[in-house]
Structure formats: structure tokens, C-alpha cells
Length: 130
Image (cartoon, one colour):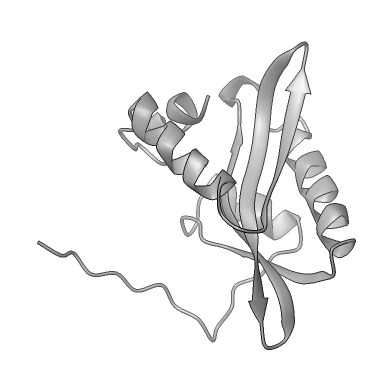
């Protein structure tokens, strides 16, 4: 599901199954990893995975990946995953969730509807190394 969702627009990422599994296993094996899986008719139709981090302000959750089956998007599954994730994190004294996503994408619109906002104090920077 991860590979097929992220190969399509707006992401257009060329994931192989092995590298996708390794990425998700890395997050699963992180200390304080936390994930939510949505199952419908004995099939995974969505998930969210990330990990809890300690900050000077308390505990934060870094949402590394969230994915909903392409045929099930806009059906409420993502919202339900986010609601359950938030409830679970509150019970673990987490006071903030943060994530990275593509600007002006359907995903950013979804996160906006879930109450996320842009943080003017933080920017993402990258550097290609060779």
C-alpha cells in the first residue's frame, strides 16, 4: 500500500518494496515508536507511524509516515487514525505532534483540517552530499 500510494501524484516517489519496508521497520524499531493501523475487511487500509521525543517543553510526537489506501482516501479513515493517535498520545503525556509534508498538497490540506498549522519558527533545510 505504501509503495502504491507514494508512487502516485502528488508524491511521484519511486519506492521499491524492500526499501519501503526497511524505512517503516526503522520507525517501528525506534525507541518510543507508536503506530496506528486501520483494518477494514481483514486488509490494512491506512496507518500512521512515528515516535515520541523528549523536548524541554515536554514530550512531542514526530509523525514520520501516514498513508491511506488510494481507493479509501477522503472516506474518514485518515481523520479517525489521527483522532485515535491523538487520544493515545495524550494518555502518554505527549503535548505536541509535528510532521513534514509537501506544501500546498492534499496532505497539507488534510493536516490543516485536523488542526495542524505552519510553524513560522522552523524551516526545513536540506543538502545533497556526494
